[in-house]
Image (cartoon, rainbow, N blue to C red; front, side, top):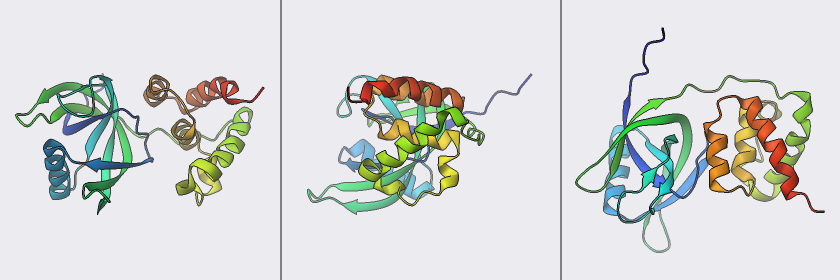
Length: 200
């Protein structure tokens, strides 16, 4: 029997978005609880957990987060035109929230089980069209991926996460794709979704 995965204490940031492994995330930080969270991350070098909001709002009372989220690691800080703290973060490992608790400052924390990275799987030939579609999406919607090598496009996990990131999907769909653990199954789901976006 496998040993239980040790739980990690992680500050949680429920958002009205889904963060995928490898994806960039830009945020403006203004609530005191999240300013404290950013200071903690800067001090410890740790990350914070991004979870889709299932109930509630980004501002105010702690929102109900989805059970599966993604660790975000801060890579840059800046001051926005409005004088707010802006951060750039990068999606890392996915996790499952086992327990949550709210601190006196309203910051949600979770005991989370980190998921291992998906294995690198060659994109099956029947999904080659998805590689072409992603190349077109990157030209218009994903300039940060323009320098990605062809070896990334050949990786089923990377291809699926990038398509899920750039396609105009509803958040419940994005969350479902995040929670899948088979990269080829994710490509199959995306292939079935694509006809919605094709012009008649």
